[in-house]
Image (cartoon, rainbow, N blue to C red):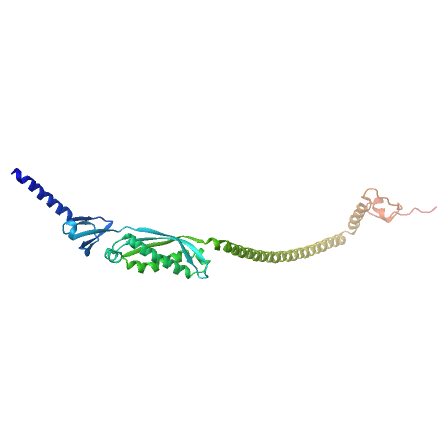
Length: 299
């Protein structure tokens, strides 16, 4: 019996090895290719516990991630429509959605896959930039350019079993030799635009000032006209009142105008008048009724 223990242990160990080598587990973040002598026999995409032929001699399993991956493309020199060049940095976010195509196209090698995608991204960037003007590459058209690169890249990536999730242009810079020339040209354009705006502003200021002066002249003229009308109406009303007063009481009217005349004639300081006491001017000083004095009879 004791002699059989090593045999039993060997059998159990072999059985455990067979079971272990025939089982594989797929997580939710993975998919798997089951290969028999290097040929794909099945593709497993759902998570769970699966079986294959024991040992890795006949059946092998290649695990492929379902997660989104990223690679960068740096310092790419692209030429725009007018022949000038930019330095561009970009990145691609992708995930493997077809493990069979991934295996058949690049032997299931991530490095080969990203080299392939990097070459295709470079070509797409050159194509999209080559259709744009120098100014458009730095404008708000960048979003449309990224979408155009992504749309060009997607059909090519599908051939590799890859889905392109996103393409982003991180940097678009001028080449050093082009930067100074572009700066000077843009400076000249801005100065010309500023001069044009300044001239337009001066023209509008002159027009507004002329309109304001004209309106001021019209307003003053209308105000003076209205004032003269009101003054004339007041003078007319005053004359009407005086005329009415004269008709009602001629003596009082004579007395009133004489008092005004006295105030105007002798009211100021230093006034000197040489008049006869019997003068008509002083008739209200002699009598409040203004009746001229009767001359004394001669002896």
